[in-house]
Length: 561
Image (tube, rainbow, N blue to C red; front, side, top):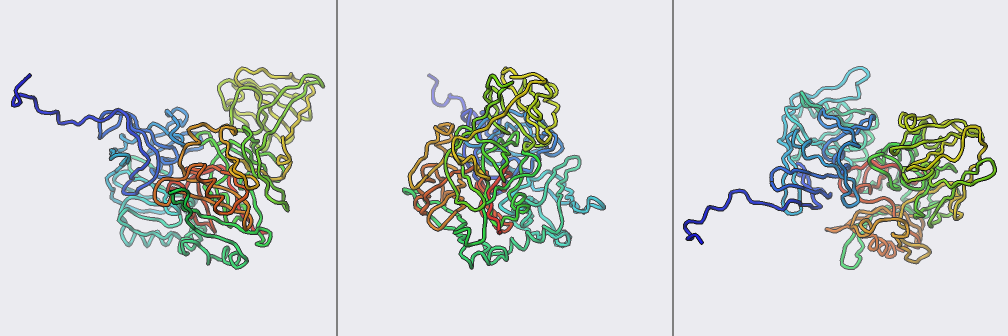
């Protein structure tokens, strides 16, 4: 052994574990909840950095383009080509090299990830002309994070009074803070684009709705005096924040509802029009429907932007149920019903052999046969590798499609059905064959005009019926603590609720169930949660699950009428 004086000096670099993860993120001084995973020995640059797609879009400024690419500061990558993995209840992408190329400094501090960019100088602010008059361009000397925080849009640079006056003339209400320029009420109203060479941030969508957002933003934290809300409150609408404690865990609950018929309110599915592919901010669903209050709805595939569960509006199945999961169902003048729902479909060829069809208008892709109608959208494009399909019109097989045609897209006309075969399943009929399509629900829930799926079902007729495994949810999902969205009925009427941890950990599904019992609910269904959790009242976002305004597939609203 060497004498103590001859021992070599310790290496200057401290070695860290090859893999680190956590649930807190600090972005340009803003503390957010969100999962992350770091791969690599170095502390100043990861070999791999996995971040949720929702965070990339909501907190960094990534944009999803119509061609399916993800874009950030002039670089486009096909979304499906970026490595993906599940991260808690989110889909995460590996973006270490992308962030590094733009100049983002990454580091960790315990279970917290830090993402930083040098604050750029705002060199010029200009408004678009002609057909681009609803556009404003920020010319910068470096990149900046574009963050959607609640109802506000935050840009991490400083502006001067003259630039702020110009923004006010455009109908915006800027507020310069130590963390950057905050545009109040614009998180869900303006689309953003980031460009390089030179560095720019472009905001699109300026117009009259911006002034409405400013007025809503200036209301009290709960907009009880807003003209669209005040009259309902006088008639008995409950809109409140409160705290409940489950065990030793304090939970913040935001709930809205009451006796809907006496309030003159109706429950309505909030859906996109014309196509089931795509995501929207919740206000983009509430405004066209005339909903005063809305929450996010059922599950969806964030990468493909397709529904994953029951969605029926005015008697039309926009998306069929999957995995016997929990749903709510109602007609125009009937009470809200809760239960689990399955649709059984089959196709009978020439009055003989019967073929089972797995799913209807669904983004849930499985081996076998599935059916798509015009409610899916004007075009069907392949959702898996090798597919073939047959088109049925007026009960007769009209056309067969090979995989190449399906990848390009085939039209879905009214009164036609497309039967798609996946995973090596063979087509059950040939052109000219006469076929009969049959659909049956396993309960009367499927006969209702409106159906919205989620899961798991939490309470039914006062009993705890939580059975996530029976509804096809993974053990990992069932054990998660996450923000939650719930629809329920019981004491006082019908309720839309969002909840999250008051001081730390968010609720598990069991804790959510027990909280619903404390609030007097007899029936309760868990909807999509995590970063999707959001409630909008009179155009103002009152709760976001993980800090940013999320894009979602569908929702549930309270509509006067």
